[in-house]
Amino acid sequence: MRDGGDIEALIQMMARLPGLGPRSARRAVLHMIRKRGLLLTPLAELMTRVARDARECLNCGNIGTQDICDICQDNRRNNGLLCVVEDVSDLWAMERSGVFKGRYHVLGGTLSALDQVGPEELRIPKLSARVDSEEITEVILALNATIDGQTTAHYIADQLEGRVTLTSLAQGVPIGGELDYLDEGTITAAMNARKPV
Amino acid sequence: MRDGGDIEALIQMMARLPGLGPRSARRAVLHMIRKRGLLLTPLAELMTRVARDARECLNCGNIGTQDICDICQDNRRNNGLLCVVEDVSDLWAMERSGVFKGRYHVLGGTLSALDQVGPEELRIPKLSARVDSEEITEVILALNATIDGQTTAHYIADQLEGRVTLTSLAQGVPIGGELDYLDEGTITAAMNARKPV
Ligand SMILES: [Zn+2]
Ligand SMILES: [Zn+2]
Image (cartoon, rainbow over all chains, first blue to last red; front, side):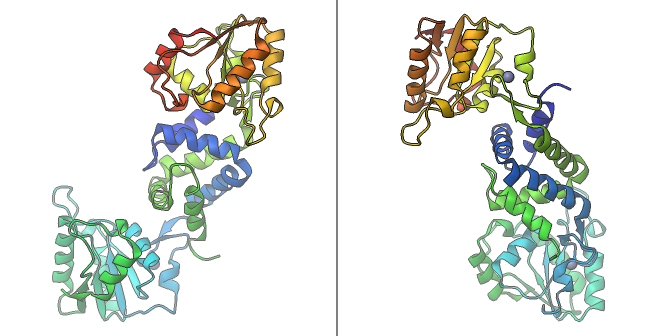
């Protein structure tokens, strides 16, 4: 093996991460090598464990290290409120705002005729089953304010109509805005001002 | 352990890398988990190996995975030309330009009265020893065009004067510019137009 082949391979693989390019990957790798004990070794160990343990929660689709995530397992959370989001990153953004104390359902994307994503490709059948089997009184549709997000929200609203109270995030979510880009205050405002669909 | 504790710890450690913040670290970690086989597992393995193997070349200060780096070991390179750079990232930038076929000497920084960095803190004594013991005919001072870089270049020029031909990178290096930020063409032009100190 060429000397430094692993280092070059590490740079090239780091450069494939979102937000990093070749130049920042080189800087990151040099930095990690210099901070080996503080950064590179712990990162390698964490990545090894996360690669082994990370999984989607069988109930809600959140990503954690157990079959049922800690939000689904947390008895202190409100069983009656279910917040539907497109992606795990949206769930994390909601959690950072700290405003929501119910549970989540992660769809795993949006309906898209173009990309041939139908309800079965998302976690929509499971959502319907949860509404039937859990003590849910309100489903909050916290989908992104994009065309696909709103199409998906309307589809779900049609499916669940008459079976549960449906609300959506209201003021604060900018047109075309994605939850994951919003600050905590905006998410809090949108959650507090949620309104019936 | 809290479910997802490793994932949260991984995000926080990734956020400490240069060029990444909390938000891009979250996106990178989600991306890695989704591309586990292609990205997370190989990254974990590469980091484990690099954490174990990475070291500074005993001769030139380049970072590789052997005690003597592949550039120092490469018989096809010109023994007579020695290019002195501040940092490994500068050496890598020179190598990407492909213009230089000699060998390198990485100082590991610049002289700085303010930060109490003297010649002994850098690889300057080793540089002097190499000029004495190797068949070096020309030392190219490829230090950054910063005040500290140029101070260091002058110090080295004083030390080596009369013992070897000294040149420095010429046209193409912008005032205040750092090698690591330059494109390959600029580095090539500066190398080809190098002039005596
Ligand atoms: Zn869950
Ligand atoms: Zn070397």
